[in-house]
Length: 499
Image (tube, rainbow, N blue to C red):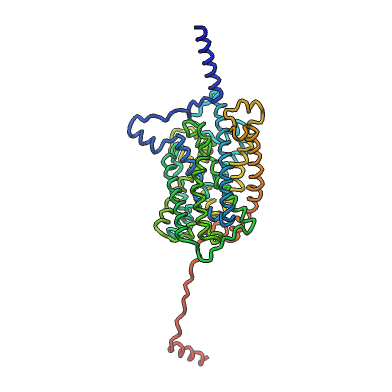
């Protein structure tokens, strides 16, 4: 009996140690709520997500939106081989830094729950993770970069809406369409959190899948244009501009913390972003290479792939689906900004969704305004990629991981150990250093130089507040004046004779 009692005591201690190691997820680590009625079951099915599948759909759907349409433009700047290699390379870097963000979130969450902090009415965000692990200076830097990136990410989606709808209906210019879609996208203020994107994420992925394969098949069936040339890369400016657009493509994990917080078991997120990236590559690699193969250097002056493909019901369907998807992605990028604003004005824990929606509206106004000032679809992606994405989702997470676990005690007590195949802590730190150096020098340094030159060139060429960026020039009618009648000639001669 004594042995059994000792065994039970040892078992209790083991459970306590295990609880300390893995953390105590009071709120989120729980099973999916069981519906009590058909109405509740339908609501859960369409509205209330939190599974690993929901997280995968969110990541895969959010990672590519309008970027599908600008990647062929990047291929024309980079050339076929560099375009393919950069996609694979930045896909790996993006998956690694998304993994780091997830590890830091779990570490922060575990430490706070040991202190009995309750997050039931609070959405954890990236800047709060940095604050809890590394202090207020890291928080301020993370907040500044994250909010600015998400702000311009929302701007890009709004610009893309106007750019795409123009290829279906050109009766209105792109600036007018921006006004209209700005009002439409403002309705995202009514979506409470990432829990409620379940059906939208699922539909969004179907939309990008259709569009990708439409671009691929339509380009192959169209064939190469007469005299097609594939001269890229020709200039360093264009080369690094294209590379930073791909950096931007695989930097869509600025909302990783919010997506994890919406999960019932967030520790299962670790490999989700990698699996999402692998699927996304099945969309981006064939579509970008097929469009570039068909149109070559023509893409240098056509940043939207839709502009070169002939109009058809299939193209119109792709445009409509991308418009809906960009509305979804706008909500994805803007929702973390809504949370930050709610916390700033003290309404984050408000139960009334109507009050929260009204309070969120001021966040949309600067996005609307910036989309009208800088309607440069394509070049703005590279500028945002080099100046904001490089720090927000590559450099800062890699540095934060190293500084959080810089001491032997922190590494020993870490909730999650680095993967064994990478060499544990030594391999993880080495890879982090490589990410920081590469992205700072190539992404921010060369990429920033190239993208800003290209961006300034767009301003010089089209101007700020341009009414219709890269729209075809209106055709001037060649009206020939009718020859004068004999009577009018006689009248003119009579007048001259009198003079």
